[in-house]
Amino acid sequence: GTTMKMPRTSYGTLGDRDVDRSGIQEMQKKASEPNLHVSLPRIVALNAHAFSYGLFYASVGVIVLPEEALKMFPEQHAVYLAIMLGIAGVSQLVSPFAGYLSDHSTNPMGRRMPFVL
Image 1 (tube, rainbow, N blue to C red):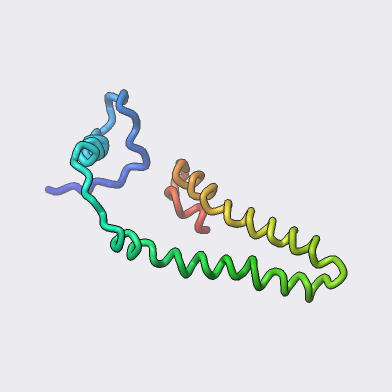
Image 2 (spheres, rainbow, N blue to C red):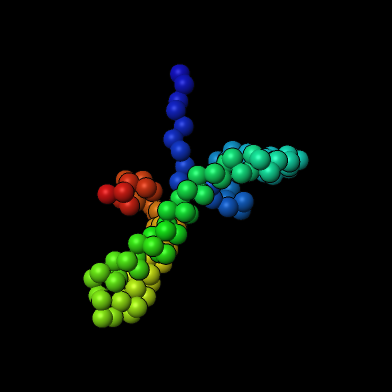
């Protein structure tokens, strides 16, 4: 019969003797292959979504937040604008940190599900 191999949570280290090395061997094989040249138009096409994403979030900091600060706090709009921009900046750092934590999670529910919930 055929057995289904479950995905592993870690590839271990090269010094582990009792670890299935198929993942490590695959990475070493890929690393030894010659690099293919990727053209500039292809790189631009692959990253085109980042332009609209960056434009949207740039407009939030440059257009939306100053207007909201002026409406909500007409007397001290500059101070509150700085606070709002600080909160917006910190919020952009949450995703990489949560990704790092989830990548190193050993929860029985899996690596991603506890953070999704």
